[in-house]
Amino acid sequence: MPDRITRQLRSIPQNFQTRADGDDLYIEGYFAVFNSPYVLWEGAEEIVKQGAFADTLSGDIRCLIDHDTRLVLGRTTVGTLTLREDERGLWGQVKINRDDVDAMNLYARVQRGDVDQCSFGFNIDKEAFVDLGGGKCRWEIEKVTLFEVSIVTFPAYEETAVKARHADLAEIQRRKLETWRATMKNKIGGKNNGT
Image (cartoon, rainbow, N blue to C red; front, side):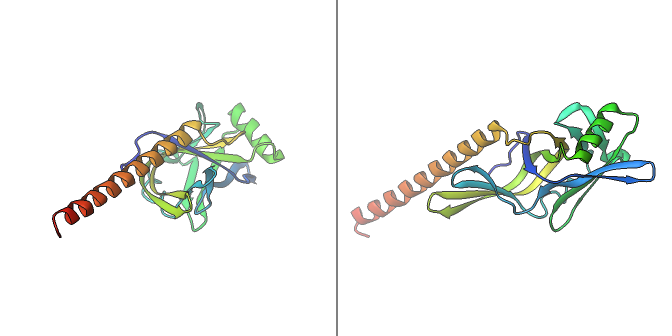
């Protein structure tokens, strides 16, 4: 399958936590969990495979509030955002700027449990399509370029992502039909030639 060049968003329900270390405040938790199916529609799902973030974590990645580029909580290149991949998924920790009202407000909301969801923005570099049989299928995201992670109020799968997956599936089915037609044409042609 060709690389996807459209920026994607994926959201998952996760429990983010707050932590105080002396005067420093942190929000931390998992932004992605490996091999955890996300249902796109009945019979279609998507997972992120372990290792998907391995080649991208050295990039310039930001932590945002609700994907709003004006509300930056932290950044990997300045050390206010730490991201790492482990056997469970993509774990992150953002150091809260006490002088940032938006960051302090979010910290209080996470601390109370009002906000505990996450999302991440990325491009798909490598993925696999798996036909599970019986009309069921799964996309397995193997490599991504990560741009941002967000702590969000309402995680929701982007409608555009679902539409894109529907288009992917239609293309896969079209290719299978073309292959089947070519195979049948060759078989029929071979019989007509006495082979």
